[in-house]
Length: 316
Length: 305
Image (cartoon, rainbow over all chains, first blue to last red; front, side, top):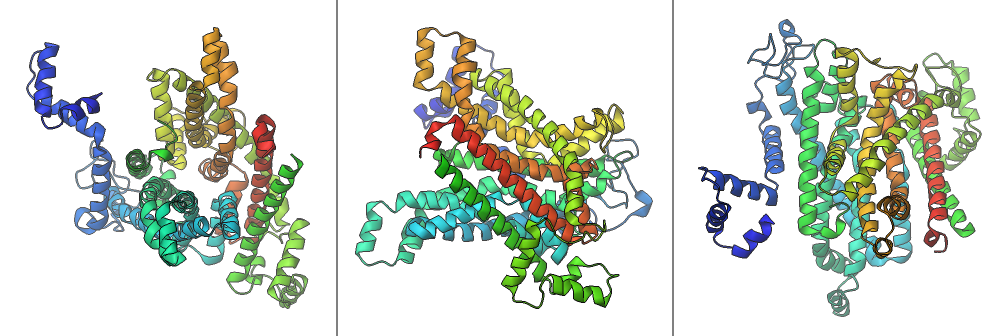
């Protein structure tokens, strides 16, 4: 409704606001129009998710400056200090400290960096591999397509968490290993979606024309079809970020992800688990950080899907 | 139908072969597999004997065939920690996992189906908002964190329920909720959108025009047809359960396969983890085959294509 009204009047939304207000016969509340306008703005644009993600990026980039303490610094005199609003809490440690006296807020700020690094590296690699294979599969078709799509089906059927455990037994725990594991299990979504788009795009006239004019298969795929799938790519990527951050936190929680003492959120929750009786905040805050981050990315992903590629929609 | 089954069986076989190659490759990637399969107390003679038994002097593909033929007979080597055949250890902890999974599945169904249907038929109602809320939160909250917070509230603070391990019915409540929430969110979304699609179809309009009662219309005409889509997605839900069982068992110290696998990391117990990976892959493939067959029985279009 709000969007329709705004769309019709176009240039002068203020006029409509005052008109609506007058016709409703309500007393003029100062600032009500501004409030209503900002509400409409928030319905149209993903303001809150973008704010959360911006905060996340800023803390990841400027972690050293923003964090009040060194995330690995032990304060053994201040073990299990509660957050500031509880009895015994201080502003020195706003979210409290863990059982070794490390500042939880500083660890969460530094943890944002780990989560984002993993997400960016994995999604970039996964998108490149998946898109290339998807283009090849869709464009060449036949046996190549059959082979690649069966491969996608198979990777979807592999119990990836158990394979990750086995990999860690053989190679040990490291950031590189976790990134490789996550890449191996995230390219398939890109491949599948890009293939579906390619199948449609390659039947269009402009592709046939460029083939007639002598363009090579690779040139057609990357120069003429790739731009057509870019919006799908954007949508799939944004929908995957949240899942990826969750997967990384699960692996870190189980002790196969980021090795301690690096402050990954999943590791922090695992640490806090043993202190539940005495210090619940150790496990609580990192969980909230994961929750808000994933929620923000999911919202942004949904919004992008509706905006750029409504055909991918599953639920309205 | 027979062609369909044969195709599915072949595909099952491919998945198993792929996973087995993966596990085999892992066992050879770190150098001498004997370092993974034998503990520190093995004598040089035992070392030699193992090498001969598993064909280490032969080329790699023969080694794979030796490994695979042993695996088919259920021999994955001896668990380093438990000092008995790895598969026996896995088999002993399967019942605990299956019991927890069934309890979790009940939670998933009990939450997702009624809420999915209700939120589809009364859009904008309280059930709709509850459904959307669960779908949203369930997909963004890490399951292990839900479990820990449930323990904090109901076990530590209120003291109503036990904090973990297996036992009487009370021990099942928190783990089942933890395990069921994530998959419930996924299933709920699918049930809801599928129900909306069906309600919008011509035959529902016809039934309504004929004057079929509201209850019959929803539960008999619409609901049954709306179930087909969730069935196809049950593979995803199943995958959620498998991941979820590892996490939930770790949080609640539940003596199942998932916890066994996580504990195997601390002992570097490769034989055990390889037995776990292969059994889970087998189970997964078997269940998805069953799902496909049910799907083909329910929807004739699949059978004849």
